[in-house]
Structure formats: structure tokens, C-alpha cells
Image (cartoon, rainbow, N blue to C red; front, side, top):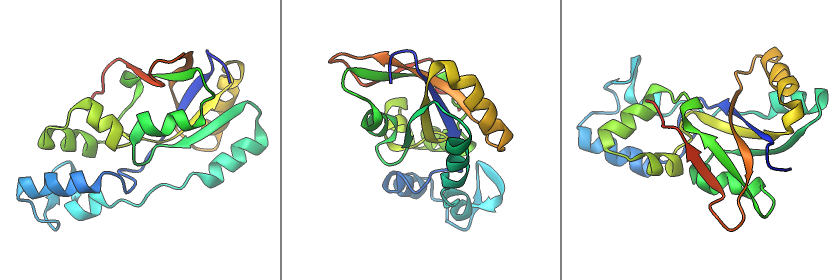
Amino acid sequence: MKAGDVVLGLPSSGLHSNGFSLVRRIVAQTGLAWSDPAPFEPGRTLAEALLTPTRIYVKPVLDILKRTNGILALAHVTGGGFPDNLPRVLPEGLGISLDLSRLRPPPVFGWLASTGGVATPEMLRTFNCGIGLIAVVQADRAGDITAAFAAAGEAVTAIGHVVEAGSGPRVTYQGSLRF
């Protein structure tokens, strides 16, 4: 892995079981019942929408690993969000620069942020914000790997790149989250 390698994001199906202490506090302050319609997802109850099952990535990722070369690392975006999970796959001295404007968080995340008054840094530390898995890939293979994911029916998005971090932060952000 080296500076310039590309970070691809695979979409999440929702919260992926993370941040539920905060979610429960936000729901409690709204006065909504779990059986009420989800304000951010018509046609589903609040409980159904918030408890959307976690997406499992193993089958498509194993298929892509068999068919391509150039995937250097994979990381689930779980509890601890981006700042705690992404450094786990990085060698010393490297970091990841994420372009937040490339993320397309599902409406649940905007609802939680606005209703709960949750600032962007806390959203990025607590939730996946629509990206459930990242793949760090060789820059010269990113196009082929992206095409392989697309052929497998996966909507993968380039969301950042590997940078020299030295002793600085391991994950940095450009752009803004748009809910």
C-alpha cells in the first residue's frame, strides 16, 4: 500500500447495528413510538427502518478477489466509524483522505443528524454514513476493480485515497456530508 492508492466504498443497508445507544436517545426525545411510521422512510415503521439487517459482503467480495488483482485491504465500517476502523488496515505512516461529498448517506442518517443535533464528527465516529465496507485498491487497478464490482451488481464509489500521514491523523476529511 502506498500514497495514491484508491479507497472504494460499498454501500451499507442502513445502521448495521451501530450507534443504537444514540439512536435510542434520539427516538426517545422525539416521542415517537417504534410502531409509528418512519419519518425518513414512508411505508415502514420506525423499528423496521432502523433495524434493517446488516448487509453481508462476503460473497461479492470473495468473487471480486478471485477475479481481480489489486485489492490491498478491506475494512468494515462498524462501531467507531471511519476514524477507528480505517486505520486498522493501514501500515504505519499512511492515512486515508476521505471526500465526504462522495458519500450518499441514506435518509436515516440525515434524520438522526438533524433530529438528534449530531455534529458531523460524531456522525463519522458513530455511524457508517452509508458506507459499510471500504476496499483499498492499487491506483492503477481501481478502474478494473470498480468495473468488476459493477458487473457483480455492486454500486461501489471512489471515496478517497491513501496519503502520507506521518505522525498526523490517520483519517482526514475533505468536502462535506450531504444529508
